[in-house]
Amino acid sequence: MKIALTTSGDDLNATLDSRFGRAPKFLIYDLDAKTFEVIDNEQNLNAAQGAGIQSAQNIARSGVQAIITGHCGPKAFRALQAAGIKIYNADAATVTEALDQYRTGKLMEAQSADVDGHWV
Image (cartoon, rainbow, N blue to C red):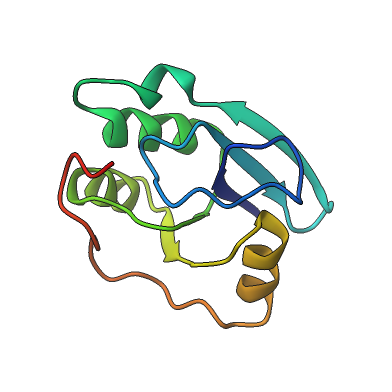
């Protein structure tokens, strides 16, 4: 299973970014193979609008089944749900900490967006 995490870094020790649509990068972690790749999200970082939807489409193309992020707005939430991707909100400091919280069942699946649109 692949899971995406919002970040600004390039490795597992990177900071977990609190934003979904405007996160600089997504770390795609394969829970089975224990490997990861980083996808750049620079094109959505400064988008006037639609950052969450575009980011959700990029994540869906990567084949992930879940996303861990700090916050997710309503349009991104709906786009991720439509793609069958589960959303988990975390306040972890790093990608590794967020993954550990997920693995140990400390993260609950989000049932709705937790911020308004255009949240920065």
